[in-house]
Amino acid sequence: MEMNVKKKIGDLDIEWSKLWQDGIMDAWSHQYIKKYGSITAAWDHKAAEYTKSMEHSNRTQLIEKIEEHSPETVLDVGAGTGIFALPLAKSVKRVVAVEPSPGMLDILKNKAEANNLTNIECINKKWEDTTINEVIALNKGKYDLIICSHALYYITDLHDSFRKMNEVSKGFIYLLIGAGHDTDDSSYSKYYERIYERPEPTFPDYSFLYMTLRELDIDPNIEMLEAYAKRYVQNMDEAIDLWKEDIDGELTEAQRDAIRDYLSDKIKKEGESLYWEWRSKDALISWRAE
Image 1 (cartoon, helix red, strand yellow):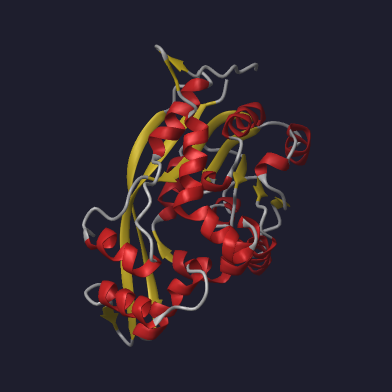
Image 2 (cartoon, rainbow, N blue to C red):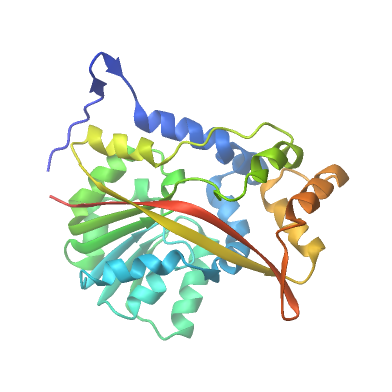
């Protein structure tokens, strides 16, 4: 299906995909590149911690929506450590997981082996670097459903990526993306500059992706979901040390104090462990491929 890009809105000529990419770069990508050398290297380093941070989350609430369509084959773009690929593999015929980070993919593969899941195929590439032919060849045809969860932050060519999703799908395409900070956490912005030593950047939201899809004549549905996750720690020092993942260099005493102040009313006790819970909103953007 030929999909032309339509950027004009009246007399305005807005490049929504570029605004999205520039905003993501300013918000955090440049920090990862500065510290780790590349986005892929950053996620290699963060893979183990990411797994722990998602162990107690409701991100998989989307699985019920997916299973309503009774797909036999699923393509997971930016599959990470397998948050969706692993549970879906228990109910579908085949899952193909595309993930550029070897560290993330190793965790996915190890978990698949531990659970005797033999119906997951992996492509260790960026989505932009895959071809339509290789993606279809692994499935011997188009996919019943595609999911891309919190991976669009790092995809550089949105137009081409969405076109490719349309080309390899014969069913629904689901994009899950963050839609804002914890609405009950008004203190985050206050502490951001103390912790990161720069003003909090303006983060592009899901509306930029919606407008990018409209440029391709795709008219998606949007549903807002409540998201949460719990991260268990042994003590406050462990919780503070977790922030080193996103800061260039070692934490200064001033940064440690700022993080401690921020977490002081958020760390809760459960049994012998401590945890903090963060809540946010996700936007679920979906459409049926044509």
